[in-house]
Image (tube, rainbow, N blue to C red; front, side):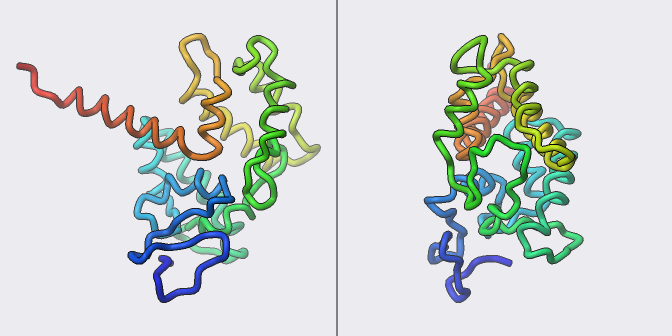
Length: 207
């Protein structure tokens, strides 16, 4: 389903005259997911998730697994339980897919909670105040686990593992500002530009 000017829009999102989906200013989670909406129609299909991961520099295997896992896991939650073999994710309802056993940085409406974000680093960033090591990421995941919430454990572990692999620095540190950029989606845009720039350099003819 694409959002067009003739269709009613949800109160927390909008569309321009060309029918392009515009994430809500209040929902940081919508902005996070909107990066993967490659045709800007408010719906994310598995192939768009795959394209988004490839755009930020992920390999074929990781991009494929991520697309399958993410879309199969979130689709029905954002579509009022309606099942589709295409596993679309409806961005306007993405707040309904917020899972437990996570940091709580997104509230139930998909809004960013600065206090929770700062608390996360105060509690787990012991080596460096503004960065997390691999061990500290694992401690964070264990600390957020809800008993017997196995789906939440897997979802949180997958999200943070991919983030750490993609964004750690040469010293193995995951910086606070980097994590902040993931929550609002701005990091994805930066990684896409960096990856595109590298590809252009590789394609330049040697004179």
